[in-house]
Length: 350
Image (cartoon, rainbow, N blue to C red; front, side, top):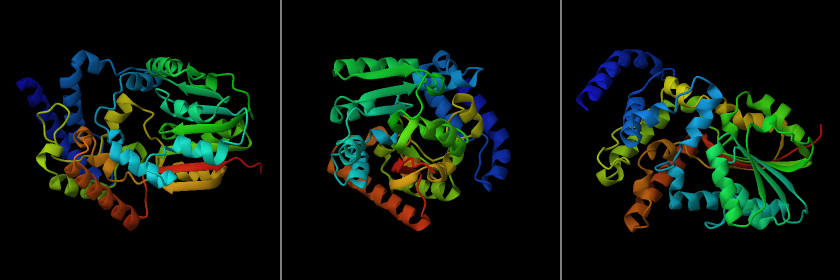
């Protein structure tokens, strides 16, 4: 234990000066937060499990990351925030975006063909299938483990959904055959987004087919702006100690850091390579039907690692969440920026 902490301390001291020069550029090569995260994962999973995430091949690092991924303390697990985003999208705290899209855009159409790219464990396809009977729904993801889970859950719920553990570009998908292509927190994992949408996604859709996205569209490689970090750290200091406890139950989150590029590339080279251009890329290739700003500029980074403390439904927790939501809304209004969007777009022949 002592040796582990000593090694981390020495490395941090050597890197501190280098990182200070990068701060003005709002980019970090290696951050203190990287070592905090690594240390926490080391404690939770053990060294062997942690090292198994690293592969020489980039695609294996991506699939390996998602095979072992657990959303134990990410902000999107908080029910109060889920309801807040539902309200922003559908106008109803209890109506998720899949139901909203199905009822508003797709209900009158028969025999729909839907492709979900980066489907994970399949929750979005299952939600769509419940509202769109007799539709052909295909889910694709690189993670074999998550596809296995998605397949089993669809079977348990008696939903006919086909799943593939593969890069969708390697599948024999008929061009011009899909009514809907869905990305839910997966589009931002692709690079050169304008070209990707033009060459790989538009051809799959029928004319007038829909692109539906629920996506991160913030800084590339999660290189948070200084203004985001400053506001998140101001709010972190205001939180009671009980809400700042990390998942290990013994460590307090003391500061919000920008993740280092080196660790991100080593663990998941697909993470947000061109995310800051996501909205622009969509607008260049599709007609906007509706688009809504979801925020995430502050809550995403502030609640990372401590979200599990906000899962109860006590009045105190709700009050703190409403306070944090208000502060993020003020930040978005002031900066006119959003790190996440929900959108429905349409393919029009040009």
